[in-house]
Image (cartoon, rainbow, N blue to C red; front, side):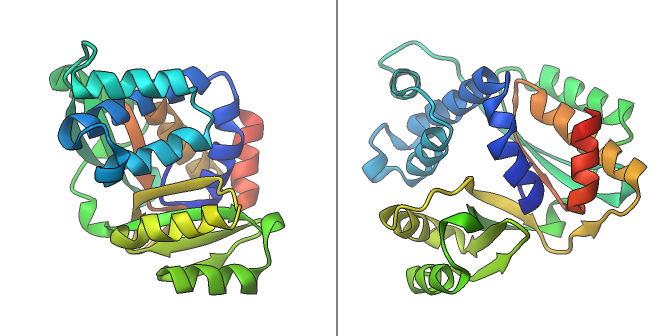
Length: 249
């Protein structure tokens, strides 16, 4: 779930290492192929591909999988034609969602996404005006001090940095994302999450445990769908409620 740093931290450090690893690789392969089809297979001339390759390497996607996805995108290997779609939705508690999809059958995917939403208290709606497009990089505090990191990323072009309980959240203009990320890599820092995402203009704070669980459950179900690449959420959920939801899962 993009757009909520605390849940992103948990997802990228815990979820990617569990039994869903194969599904994560499959979704990244789709993104790589689509990026190559639109912009070519050379990351030096394809910023979108460079960004996706950052994500792939961050989760240790095998090089063979990456090479195969690139070749499918450039036409060297036979591949599937995917259509990019965005669904704007609401979850329980007035939480807005943006769901990014890559599909070879938009009617099937639309029906399945709608069914997940309907069954779990969500609905399709216009929500995009509640978000803005930003680069988001999340770094564990154990890797560097706050003042040192702040000076580093601001010099590289970052817009802001916020300190959370265990992580720093860096935001950038989308066009500066790559420069900031490259500076972080040069300084041997390892983000747990780095992407250009839809971030909420006004987060919706949830304090009711039942509502928080319902929102997190809906997001998990959407993210588990094979065609869903990302779910961006306006939810701001306290760590304690996230931990309770994970413990109950």
